[in-house]
Length: 194
Image (cartoon, rainbow, N blue to C red):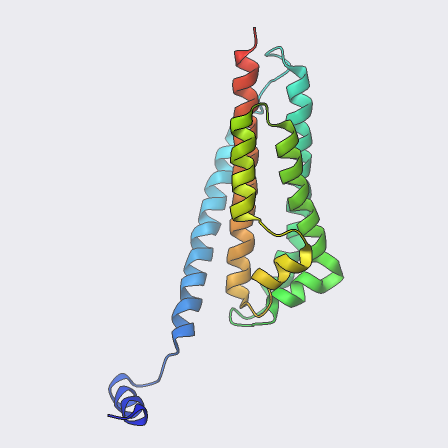
């Protein structure tokens, strides 16, 4: 049977033709919904936890380190907000969404810089080699790009809005988990002091 014959057969049995891209787009939307629900749970959980009282535990220098990382995390959130805002009104399948939001007022560059700063601070404040190695491994797999343009080309150029939202949401979770890992390592180091 020819390709044209297969197309006709599938059209007559299946009704309208669905492209493979439709299924992928639906999967991105489902992932976005799942990541959104996870963010709500994590934010709720984080809101219930008091900050680690490093000063009360005899480690005021660790408090300064944890605060510097928290400030860097806030900068990521602030840099992500306008990108998510730009993406909110764009159709899920718009292939220019990533480029548009990335280049609008240099938002992508600002976000890249904020994310890089979190990784740099986390590497500097990590209290032990094991944590520094985990941070380095995390960065090389989750955020391996050295320039904003390389990051844009890899993840945002010709990517549908749904994929861009998924990538940004995952990046947001990765950064939050990185900060939690550093806080835990600082707490262990503080409690291990004599």
